[in-house]
Length: 358
Image (cartoon, rainbow, N blue to C red; front, side, top):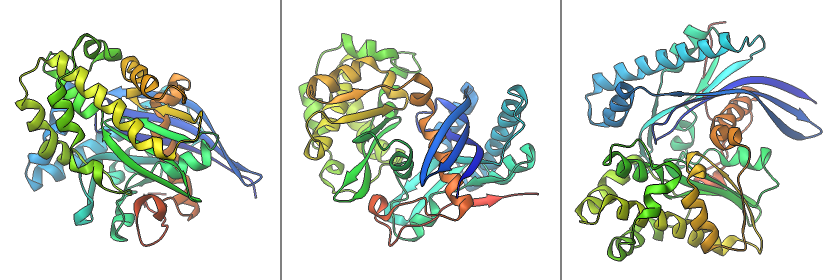
């Protein structure tokens, strides 16, 4: 049976770029899913919000709870403006990932703030949110969640590689879709760029001017996370406890650190994908890191036979928001939106909480 859904997908990533809003039409026809991105916008976070979100994990329980509500109200206000400015008349529901604060799979713990009930109350539409907690309860990693969207919406590619705060990849392996977090990308690069008074290293131009720090690169390559089998996932806490101090202790310049870490990311991605890549593998890039020309250049250098493709800018920027819209559609239909082959959960599951005042 054919079906059609008009959905707004919301994504707030760990790199703190802002709130991605994607208004999409999803069509199910002839046992296939299709997506059309109708309107999109990134709402940049103010310096105040960046400060709050970058430090929320160190606050009190009350501060956390208050921020959850305040961020939900902020999301709701921005989405309502988006609906009004784009004269959106047809909308079934809003699907929000929220903003991750804690992600500790070993404790079956993950938290995304941005209260869905507040969004629903302000916008007047149902909201689907909290996608990860069901998988966690089933002993899964709760991440990555995007792979089912990769499989159903972008199946012509061998690998779907997202370069956001964290690099994650999904692909078919032995008849199942698998995915995992590879390494930190913009969480580290932005942390270093801020020490030069920049929000980020545009196009990787600062990294391009630096020199390699061989000792730092060697230390990065020895990180224990890289020895773990998939499924596996990373959270910001792992950066703080395992990488931040190590990088800070090296005396090399910030351009050299940016150069070294960008090199590390490119090498680690190629190392992790190489065993599963066929000749001339097709790779779809997305996420803010896809605009880092130097990083993409290095990936092509280390894997010259791969077809590393950059889609149109809107897909690069809004792919995660699009897919979280799609996860909401599957939840709305009562269908599985999280794969055990990806997360390691006991079974495939249908995650998401629905808030509706209709």
